[in-house]
Amino acid sequence: MPKEIIDLIEKPEACPKCGQALAEIQYGTPVMNAQLIQGLAAGTVKLGGCCTTGNDPQYYCKDCGKYYRVSSKRSSDAP
Image 1: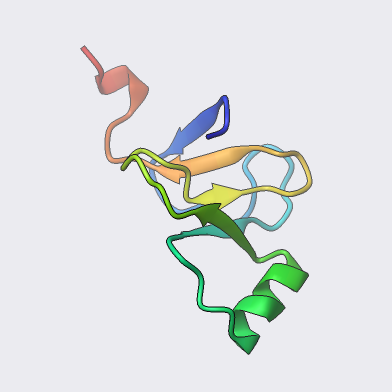
Image 2 (image 1 turned 90 degrees about the horizontal axis):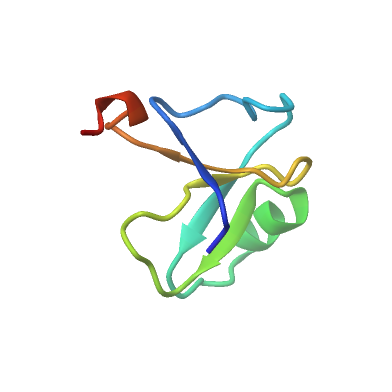
């Protein structure tokens, strides 16, 4: 699990920090088919492993190394 996961309100079109394309993180046991292999090679997909916490990141920027997740709760909403 990454040290820092940045919460966002909606799915980003690009990395909010550097503006580069994000990879979607896929969890579970991967089915290695041509589409997944192509996504891994292109950097549009990143494998996240088979164990999840329910609070895992959904996107990764390979350029700046930041992890993101879409969260319905903003940090300002926290008690």
